[in-house]
Image 1 (cartoon, rainbow, N blue to C red):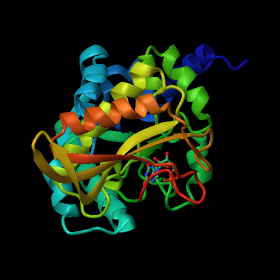
Image 2 (cartoon, rainbow, N blue to C red):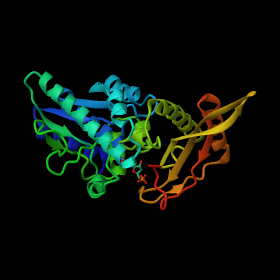
Image 3 (cartoon, helix red, strand yellow):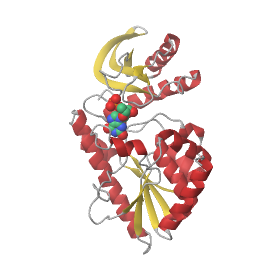
Image 4 (cartoon, rainbow, N blue to C red):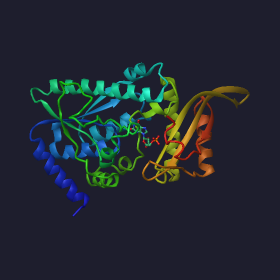
Length: 325
Ligand code: XMP
């Protein structure tokens, strides 16, 4: 019988058996799937698990601190946090094509991850890291043929972890490979992960990199992070976070005139995007109350001096996509 409790106990027992006394490495993104894998593995093998969390400078506000708090501080999971902001931003400098940006981010992620993997292997005094765990879920297996849907921090796995250099020949562990998202969420709750983490909206692997239109700059990312955080706060406060499938702010590298006090302000434009969808293949723009949009828009323009105008995206998918790039 399928109950989250049964599944959890069975998977933990299987993982113990499969892994034995070997070391396991996991790329932790902070998303639901890799978080549930971390919780499962932590229960199964404790200290034999090392997680790598890559801060690529394209995360939401305080994202890295939150991941460290939940996993390292509260759960006692071994997490290595890699500060790779400069590396990612330097790699992205001058590039404005969306697909090329995705490729650069994906490649840089693999480079950083491979480096940490090598370090962990070298430092685990003789105990070789034999396994790499991933939060692949059933829809990823089906969708993996599609180029645009590359999943956050999953290193494509068809022929034993393609993408990683040859000297890092890990065996793969994918304990969620036959589960759907709602099953993964139930499992996460059973494992004691905070509901706030389990019911979060999906966040794309390239992160703010595809929500800053065109060339990515630190200045833009910092502004976008603040605007996005205000939007998230107000969605949560109003109860609309749970009524939308995905919501975020987008940075538009165009300037618009505004007026502040006696002065004229010539500053950036932020778009708000919120959608309702079940499968993410089609989506309707969320019919947020005007009062909510008004609160968010006023707060963004009042609290962020570099923003002079806020727009709401009323495009549904198709023909638009959910992300702007
Ligand atoms: P689109 O924009 O294609 O988005 O309507 C559909 C869903 O996929 C997510 N998405 C991505 N996720 N890497 C990811 O991990 C990507 O490159 C990527 N592009 C889009 C998007 O956030 C939405 O949930």
